[in-house]
Image (cartoon, rainbow, N blue to C red; front, side):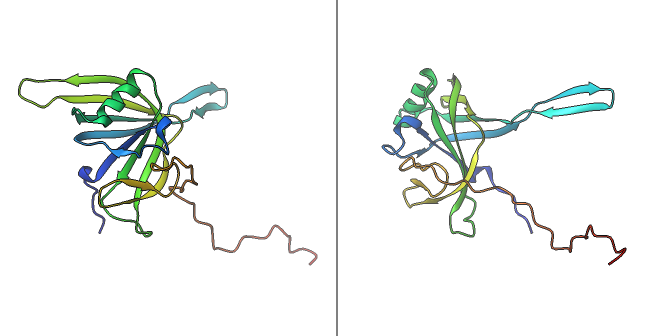
Length: 188
């Protein structure tokens, strides 16, 4: 039986691109929520033979909300947003390990836009910001050690910034049925 993945088990790790190999990506502490959106727009052109659809590449964004703290990570994120600095974002699925004994994850680099800080009288200070990826999220897998420091084993490494081959999300199955022959039976 299939079981649902709890939102609590989907976490974000972030790092500044210019610090790859010098500073490890870190888990976004006090994360309240995030949503990863894939949006694809398409243009439709009417022709005399019917409509033709021309899809455009997908845009990937992550809207994130977390409680503000005086941590270096929050300071780095605000610095990146204010100064248009590129960051790395990893979404890690901690619900269970895959067949390789690692955690499935997705990675992209891009930019933050907006920094909305809310300070209510009866609540913690929260921050909302939006990450827009350059290209798409690449899939990989990670090993999380006891200190929850991520070590990427595919795509872009949190630890050393090395780019590695991405893992495809899905590979179409090949047909095992015999293929029909184009040869005619006449004259054989």
